[in-house]
Image 1: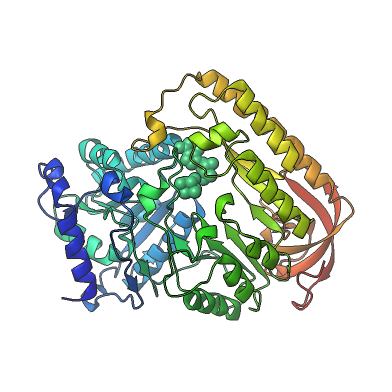
Image 2: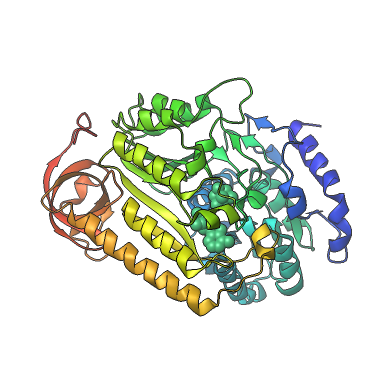
Length: 512
Ligand code: 5AD
Ligand code: SF4
């Protein structure tokens, strides 16, 4: 028995207790999710698999077949899709952008809010006809929603066009799952509710040739009371520094210009190593030495953001001056109910330290309004914190109860109309401060990584500054993928306009 089979069997045994809930529906492969099991921390060893390979018997599986993947949610999901696309290619499938001509359709789903889930169910509804017209098409659901029992139950009851459901820990099992789905008449379900592994050498088909995502860690142990992620993505586990560094060196050699390091809580990077003391600050310091023009990371948790990291970021070079630092609320009592593990004062102190070290830093954030029992005064504290920090952008959300999380059990006396009104007021402030931040660029010369033609006008090029501001300017397509200097001549709420000054050779990057 090889390592992968052993791992699989141990998982199957582990979830036996949930079998009876599902056995009426199918007899073949089924490993059903359990949010309760997914919540456990610390009992399982993290397995580190260095050598992912596809079993030779599966290699011709995709000959003459096409795959289509639709991705919902965060960058982590986008990157998982790149990995699944890599596996499909190794199996011999070809990609298609047209769902009608696909032989395998996958929905890579997001569970973070109810409306994200509703979009997926809506999309699945559309696939009923596709399945009716062509019963040989395989339809699969993966990503965070598949980790939820309630979702799997709903699909079993209502969406019998679905052939396979697999979880976030089962991506590397895609060849087996597909094989099983071709052989079985029943729905194939394989969702491991485990703490998670680290699997290296998975194939990837990256979406572009300019910017790349690189996972540095997986999972989350923070258990903010509103959040489903710690249940769907397992425990915090870091990739080894040498694997990350090697991947980024390769990307640099391939000509990529920007890397975004990914993790649900990147500031916890390295906490799980028991054989070395090496945290995000150390990683960023090592990545500074690599010839990759820009390096970003997302998402940060304020609690784990340490002084060493700030010191390293202040050295700049290829480490950009943009930090996304979700605050969620400006009220200390709300933060306590959310179990964020910091209060308003601690957040402001962190902001003060970051600004002292990197005065030109662009800070952006995530905010939830209408958390259970949020009062007008508490909401006003969020508004005042937003102004005090001077955020340049924010993703704002109305709280959405997620089954299985502690907040979902809290009684909530805030009417939806009040929540919507608060969101509107906050969004007005977000727009106002964004326009103000943009205005400050008027007349400045900025470094832009040119990504392509503008969506609105193909004669115009579009790219981003180190601070993640969209810049449009007139230029020829030969400079796509290059770093250039642009003089800003006009500012809008969400973008800048300018004139091309110079194409950089690569040596001057980060000097402005
Ligand atoms: N309801 C609303 N927003 C949420 N987020 C996470 N969980 C919820 C929820 N249950 C938001 C947080 C987080 C971002 C990715 O999504 O602001 O930072
Ligand atoms: Fe969710 Fe909090 Fe973890 Fe972010 S830090 S993924 S909000 S539990």
